[in-house]
Image (cartoon, rainbow, N blue to C red; front, top):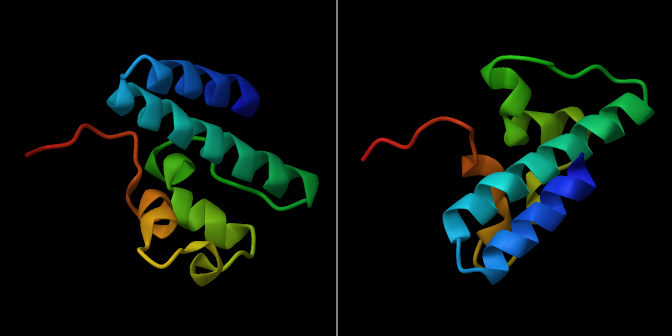
Length: 89
């Protein structure tokens, strides 16, 4: 599923549909982290908001957010801010 969502995200990005691309890329990351947790025998939330929290999934994997960041904080921002909820402006 992670690979399929990543391909979908790339197709949408190539079409200039960046919002949908980011949304599906977030799912690709989520599924990848959950697959890792399953592989190493750690549980992960399977439903609700916690099941989509990339920051908590990242930490559950034992990864540090500092290791993810670049000089502008772009990669860290994605993990810290991506969610499946509707954005309210």
